[in-house]
Amino acid sequence: MLKKIVLATTALALCSCHKELSTAQIDAVIKKYDTEDFSALKNSYVGYRGKDETANVMLMVAEFDLNCPAYIATIYPKTKELVKTDDHLIKESDKNCASYFKKEQIADYTKAFLKYDLKVIGVDAAGNVYINPTEQDLPNLLRIVPGTTPKDLKDFKKYKGNWYLRKE
Image 1 (cartoon, helix red, strand yellow):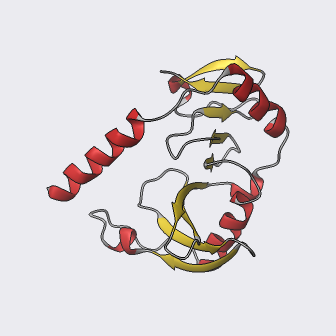
Image 2 (cartoon, rainbow, N blue to C red):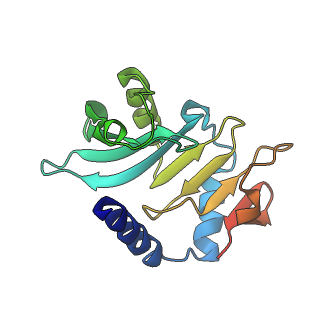
């Protein structure tokens, strides 16, 4: 019960402190990533989580659908090499989640993620790209692949071209 209260409080704190992107910021992100190939991150969700006590980068790496908890990947920032993976969230989960990524897959996803100046990237099986460029929060921008309809498209409003913004 205490674990659920802590998780709920953390989620509320994260959601309540997000900053709105200006139109200029949104347009800059779209211009930069409009034709970018994110296929190396297909079926994954990767988010920046901060740095550890030795300044290594900490990333959350999960399957895109987030049915199971994430791995915590520790990355040496100078070489972008995977230092270690932590699957304690998966092992401690109430869900029946077995380890679902191999260490090599996590290394590939983290390397691909670190090529971009974004805080969160998720790519579904169809190649639709969810990003948050500035916050460790839910993706607030969605680039859809023409001819696809993401399950959560109702949570977004059309902005321009293939880009959508998360509804308030």
